[in-house]
Length: 346
Image (cartoon, rainbow, N blue to C red; front, side, top):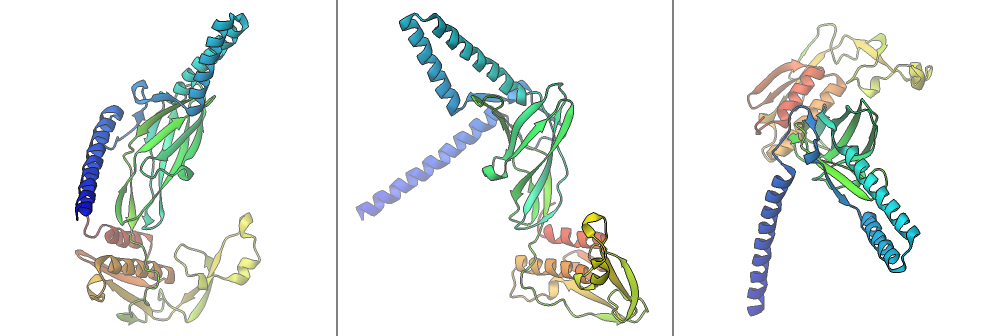
C-alpha cells in the first residue's frame, strides 16, 4: 500500500512539474519570439526577429580555434597566430553571411485549397527577396509537426519571389489554421544556424472523410421524361471532351487510343441523350439513427462525390441548409462546405 501511495504521489508531482514547465516555456517562448497569433498581410523579418547560435560543428570549430591559439602562445608560433586569426576571420564572415541570408526577408501567405480529413493540407507560402543579393538554402517547416521529411528548402534570387508548399496532416473536419512556420539556414559554412518564426494568417477548409464502404446512393424520388436527362443512357449522341465529374465508365477508349494524351491529346467521353432524368435527395435526417454525427457526415460526403461522378442531380438537406437538386462544381462545393462546418463556428 505504501509503495502504491508513493508511486501515485510521484506521478502527481511529475504531472504538476510538467504543467509548470509547459507554462513557463509557453510564456518564455511568447516573450522571446513575440508570439501574438496570426500575422496578417506581408511580414518583414527585421533583425530582432532573427536569432543565431553555433551548430555542433561550430562549437567544435571554436574549440579548435582555442586549442590553436593556446598552442601558438605556448610555442610562440607566428604562423600559428596567423592561421588562427585567419580561421577566426572566416568564422566572423560566416556569421555575417548566415544572419544576412535570413534577415530582411518578406513573407506572404498564399492560397490553401480544401482537402478531405486524413489527407495532407497544403499551404502556399511566398518568400519575397527585395535585396540585390541571392539567398540560399532556407529551410521551412511547421513547428507543430516536427517532421524533417516535410521540410522544404528554398533558394531566393535577388529581387524575386519564391513559392513554397508546406504540408501538414488534416485530421479533423472544419477550418485548419496554418501552424507556426520555422525558417532556418546554415548557409554558407554550416558553423552557425539562424532561425526565425512566422505565424501565417492562412487556413484551409477540411471536408469530412468520405466513408470507405458506403451503401448505394438513395433511390430517386422522382423521374421525369424530358428528352434530355442528365442520367440518360438510352440514345448515343456522340463524343465530347472530358469534363470534371464525368464517370470513367463513359470514357471513349477507342478514340482515346488513337491520340497521345501525353503530347497534347485530350480525353473524350461518350454523350447520351434521352431517358429518365433521375434526382436523388441526400438528407441528414433520414440516415440511420445508429450512426453518430461524424459517420453520417462521412456517408453524405461519399454520396455527394459519387452523385457528381455519375452525373446524377441531387438535393441536399443538412440542418438549416436545404438545396434543390443540382449538379456541378459550385453545388458540390456548397454541399461539402456545409458538411465541413456542420456544428462548428465559421
